[in-house]
Image (cartoon, rainbow, N blue to C red; front, side):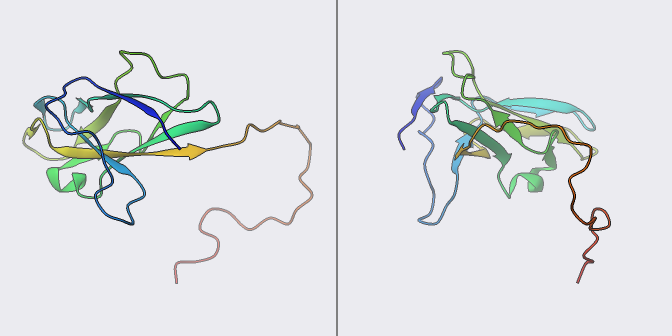
Length: 143
């Protein structure tokens, strides 16, 4: 699948798969961003994308981003297919869990995206699903 991608700062590399088995492409911080301790910060990721109408963008932190003391504020980000304007730059919203400010330098790979196909569903409201209950979240145990 081909998608259109716009970089805001062309001195930062175009996102790419870093290994043969990588599921996502890494995104880079477009500018230096300092996040105070215990606060939220917005890291611009230097890209706007256009994906097919039957797709959405999964935005997540890289597995190493927590080493900076930053965790995604909303777990993951979802980019709808119509979030595709020239100024619709993706941003990673992070929470600083450290007791000191954290500075993310321009060019640091902090996030990753994957493009996911989906099918729209039609909701049918019912009073009962007619299935046996499993017993709640985590009902199968931990081992």
